[in-house]
Image (cartoon, one colour):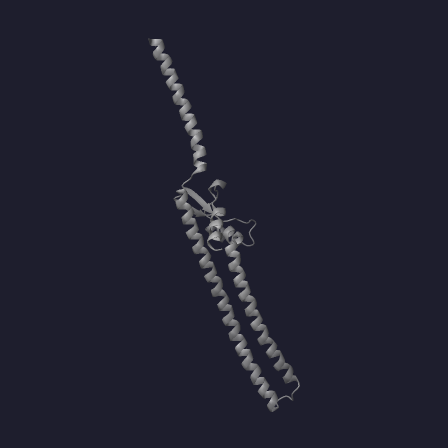
Length: 197
C-alpha cells in the first residue's frame, strides 16, 4: 500500500512539474500573442501613410500656387522698374511709376505675409487632421486587441546635430525599448489609409 501511495505521489509531482513548465512556456508565447501594451511610431505613420502623403501634396500644391502669385507680382514690379529706367529721373511720369512701384511693393509684402500665414495654417490643419486620424485608428485597433495602453515610440538618430537637439530628444524620448511584436504602426497606417481612400 505504501508503495502504491509513493508511486502515485511521484506521478502527481511529475505531472504538476510538467504542468508548471508547460504553463511557463505557454505563458511566454501567450504574452507575445497578446499584450496589454502596444507601441506606435508617429514619425513612421507620417512618412509612410498614403493619407499623410496626399495631405503633404495638397500643402505643396498650395505652396506652388502661392509662389506663382508672388512671381506674378515680382514680374509686374520688374516691368514698372524697367519702364522707370526709360523715363527722365524726377519727371512726372517717373514719379508716377515710382508711386505705382511703391504701392506694388506694399501689396507684394502684405500678400507674401498672408500667403505664409495661409500655408502655416493649412499645414497645421493637415497635421491636426492626421493626428486625429492616428488617435482614432489607435483606439480602434487597441480596443479590438484588448490593449490597455499604447505608447508613442520615436526613432532616435545619433549622433545628434546639436546639444540642444540632443537635450530635447532625451527629454521627450520616453520609451527606451519595446519588443517588435508590440508595434502596431503598420496596422494603424492600414486603417488610416483605408478610411481615407
